[in-house]
Image 1: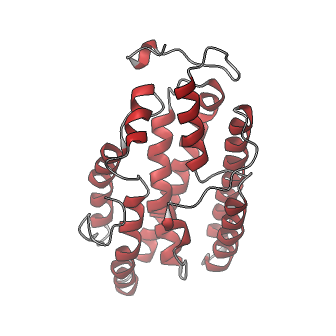
Image 2: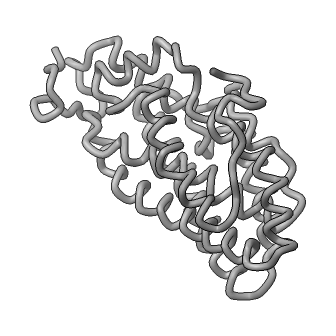
Image 3: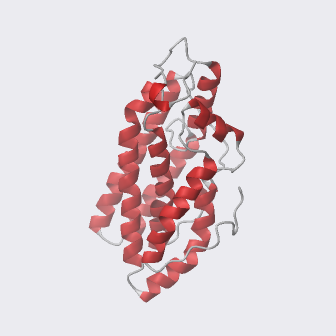
Length: 241
């Protein structure tokens, strides 16, 4: 059995015969729903689209080079998730997409800045949740995944500050935040998710969906306001409350 306190949790190895069935099932569910997976044809298509957008919309070679580093890490993240799932007996994933943020059109450099500043910031929070996760194959990569996501969202905020450094850019950012803010808040999932509660109970995450979302809002709104962007109401145009 898994102990109630995180400090006493047993860390399960790949193929551990004593791993509880519920733990294994929820671990697989969590990773199957995680977007970064090189065994998912949808993720490969997303990488292709993002590469084209990054190389096309980057305003200079320095930014293009930073995007190339970011994209390399995204490819590696997909390989890591696939490797961990393979150890759980899952070789191929074709999961319907619930996180519609990844289908939003990226038409301008400002869109791309929001994609990384806000979308990858969610990845940073998830990475924090996985630090201390009681499954060794994922625990092995958790710190690196978190650090990569910090780089991604920091680059995005740097690019967003660049956009907002002109009146025209702030005007564009003030319009586009209405597209990106609802989608990024919905990335955390439904507030009443039973799976979310079970993840916390079994140590797969530290906070439930709504707890993560509220922390994200409290931390991120001031960052946006500091560069002149005011996000809409947190329930405006949301799909998953």
